[in-house]
Image 1 (spheres, rainbow, N blue to C red):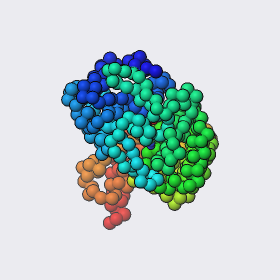
Image 2: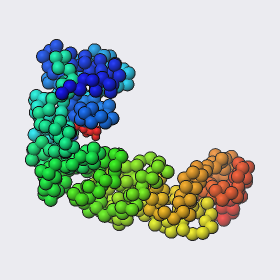
Image 3: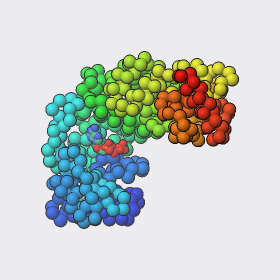
Image 4: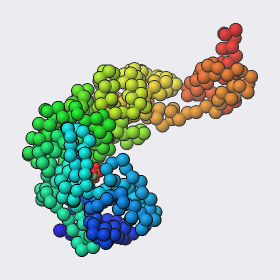
Length: 423
Ligand code: ATP
C-alpha cells in the first residue's frame, strides 16, 4: 500500500517538499526516515491530523539538526531520549526521534531506552493501529510499513495491543485504548479487553504518577465524545481505580455540561468536567482525587471554592426578587466553570436566567473610580478603601448610582461615615 497521494493531498507542496527532502537526506548517508504513529493512522482513516512525527534510523537529534540547517529552521531538544522538534521558518514544526527500543523495569515506571531499528520502534507502541510507518525513502516514498497487522485492524475497526505485557509496561495505555476506541467507533479486541480488566483488577493504575494520569484524563476531556469515554472508563473501573470519588458521577449533570460549556465558554472545559465529576463529593475526597490527577494549585483553589460555595449559591438563586448585587455576591464566589455546572445541574428557568444575567452583564460591571480617587478626595489609604469601593459597586449593580460623579459622592459619604465611626 502507498499513501503518497493522501500525503500530498493533505499538506502544502512546501511541507511535502520538506518531507521528501528529509527522506533523501537520510538516504544519502544510508539511513531511513519514516512518518510514524497517529498521522499514518489518520491518513488511512481520512481523519484530520497535522502532527508530523518522524523516526529516523541513526541519531534523531543529529538528524533534526541536519534538516533544520538545510531548511533554515531551529531545533528544540526534548528531555526525552534522542528526540527533538524542528521549528520551520513558515510556522510548521516536525518532531524527530531516533528509532528506539524500550524496556520497562517495573509497571508504570518510565522506560529505559536504547537505539534500535524501525520494527523495534514500532513494537514499543501502544496499539497495532498506531504501529504503522510511512517510508519517506526516495526508493519507496509513501510505502506503508505494517509489521503487526495494523492495516487489517484499521479495516476491521479494532483496538489491539501488540503483546500481553503492554498494559503492564505502561498502564496509561488503558486510557488510550478507551480514547481511540470511542473516538473512531472501534471495538476493543477481545484479548485486549480481557487484558484491560486484568490490569485494572491487578491494581496497575496505582503505579502511575498523578502527572501521567492527569495528562491522559485531560486528553480524554478534550475529545468530542467525552461522555461515552467517561462511561466506558467507569465500566472498566478505570476512574474508580484512580480514586473512588471519580466513580460516582451525576450523569444527568454531565449530560447537560456540553451545552452549558457552549453557553458560558469558561477558561478550561477540561477543569469543568473534572469539577463536574466531583460535584457531589465531600470536599476531602474531592481534593484527594484532584491530587491524583495533578491539578495545578490554581485549579485546586477553584475546585475548593466551587465545592464549598455552590449549594449556597443555588439556594440563594431560588429566591424571588433578588437584588442584582446579591446575585453578584454569591456567583462571584464561584470559579467561571461553576456557572456552567450550575446551569447544567439546575434546569429551572429563573435560575438559568440569573446565571446568564450574571455572566453577560453583572460580572462585567466595573466602577469608574478606584483608590486613587479616594486618596485625591483626601482620605488616607487603608482597608476602608476596599470596603467603600465594594459598597459603591453594590450600589452600581443595583442601579442606585450610574455616573462617575454619583460614584464619587457616594464613596465620599461612605468614607466620611467610616472615619466618624472610627473616631
Ligand atoms: P492523537 O490523535 O491523540 O494525537 P496520536 O496517536 O498521534 O493520537 P500521540 O500521543 O501523539 O498520539 O502519540 C504518537 C504515537 O506515539 C502514537 O501513535 C503511538 O504510536 C505512540 N505512543 C504514544 N503514547 C504511547 C504509549 N503510552 N505507549 C506506547 N506508544 C505510545
